[in-house]
Image (cartoon, rainbow, N blue to C red; front, side):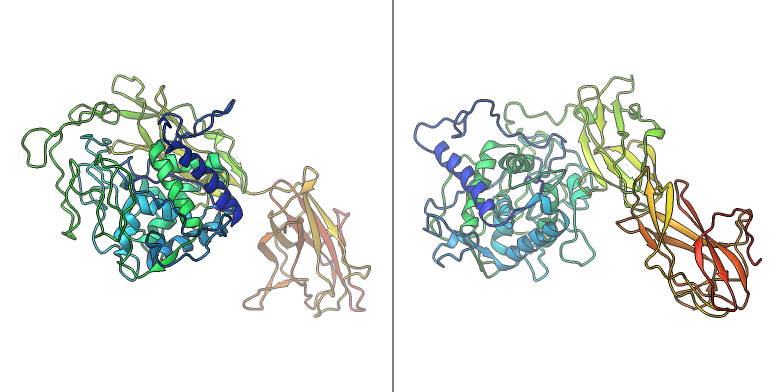
Length: 592
């Protein structure tokens, strides 16, 4: 149903503290006399209600969800429980199917490594999995984590739900006319296209696989600079998954419940919830394990996915009932599927003022330029509330902020969508960002971007000892040449360097005699080295130098992007007094 979040879990007490505070507010909201408007929160000067992610990149299309709440009695009666404390086996609602639980914990571990600042707790994934699919229908998954039967949300045809026309040609949901949320974490296809992950290492990104879906949900929640140990970020992430205060309260309630203790149960034996947000039934907690229920069965515009493992790709008729007869009633405020949507009115996309010169950045830096695209009608009028997908392509490791190579942003009132900030990786060269309209086959707009090499404008020779480099003809220099790179006075790390034994100060072509390096693989003599890089302190130590039988003075030149140049003078003498030193003499010639 809904999937939007952002960052990762700080451990133990911090996780429990945030959830506890949230549930304290929730409990107040459920007390007699509490109103639905303030949701039980105490009025605080300057405080504002949490808001969802503004990108328009909904995970589930705000589909219905399970509304069952956990028992009022904690599975661990201790007033200060430790996160993860085992609970009594009698607390059936605390049991999570083994494979599903394993998927949540592995997703948390991966996010802990890749996005440690997010502080994503697995209990949040478990809470969302509970309300979205009842933990994959009580753990109805195979050994690899793939659901035994499809879990599909309602047809998003605007008939009581959001109107999202097909974006995947039915590849994920079997519906080539409208989209449907898919899998145990209920991603809509257009979001899965960029958020999908391979969580079980089988080389596929399958929304029907709990390992893939849980990892995708974790990255989805951890977008941008969210820190889920902070209540505001946590609430915003959950509301982004499904923009409903009741949904937020329900997820927080289960998150707190799981943080006080849980245990694994065999796959297929989990306790399934039985109440949906669209069926008008009160929120209750089942007193005993029930037959796994599907929150999408019997919904307007949807099929019962509980029995047939092959979902029907045929959606209900727009605005019509299940039997094609009288139109099904449409709640007030929902769009009429026969009326053109803003997306339908878009004729073309235009560059909204982004200059190519703005899209250049040094490796490792953020781009200062912003990619902006404007959606227009045939007459050139702006079209608001249209989802624009920005996709990075080419041989690059550049990403958008948050580490994604795809981002979806809704156009504003001026029809303009601005892509998230681009972050250059370490690969240099050109790449492309393409803007397209989600749900349409219109021609996209391409933006060319360039990542340049890290620069160094000064190279300085350093010495590791007071003993000069020495060797005889046919021997090896005792020490290695080391240098330090700086740029505008600051340490220049990860700067590429080229070292060449040159013919003379005025002829920088490669010498064919004198000192040389050895190829690391073949051992053959080489007199030009590329692919060298300074370390975090700006230091670079060159490989060991050797001398052939030619005596004389030779030059080694090291260069870097940005103009850094260092020339080292090498002298090979039969008496063994060969030395290596910075060469101040531009007239020195190799082999003299």
